[in-house]
Image (cartoon, rainbow, N blue to C red):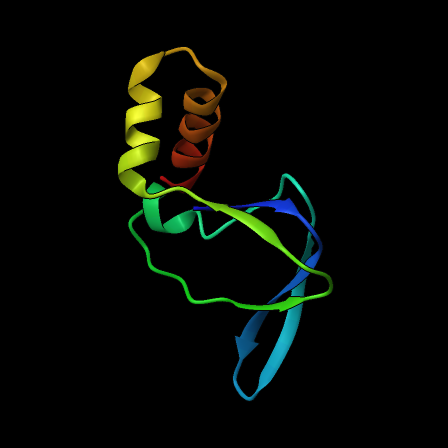
Length: 86
């Protein structure tokens, strides 16, 4: 999981021979969450519009954070995403 800490980027999704802008990423935005939430690897293209500072969280770290407090906001939000995916 990657969290944008500073800066702005554009996330693109490839569709055939075209790269389509899917969203703008700003501080606080998260991408690549499908890898640890659903176990689905996803490759995305990012175009930096400014210098970026990102926080990379490995799935083991997220699991550790989730175990610290069952009713945490992180657990609540992850549960919502997983429930929607099923």
